Length: 73
Image 1 (cartoon, one colour):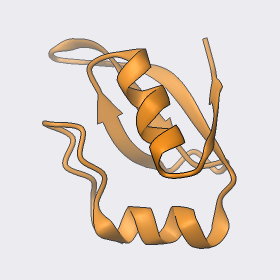
Image 2 (cartoon, one colour):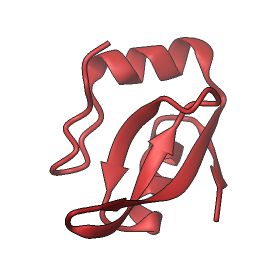
Image 3 (cartoon, rainbow, N blue to C red):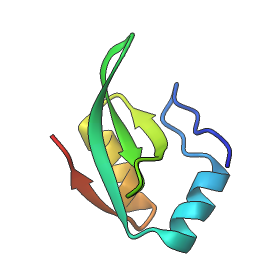
């Protein structure tokens, strides 16, 4: 599977296909990067699909792809 474009929050086509075929829930969790706190959209097994600057952006990107986001604090 291609790596998502983490710089601008785009989710790769392979990640979208994977999500549409096998996922219902996406976990949104904070991650620390050299740019500070960002928010990862992850699968149930912890695979990171995308990285966003804000929790809201991560949440709505998951919803846009027909996933049910679950926030992990």
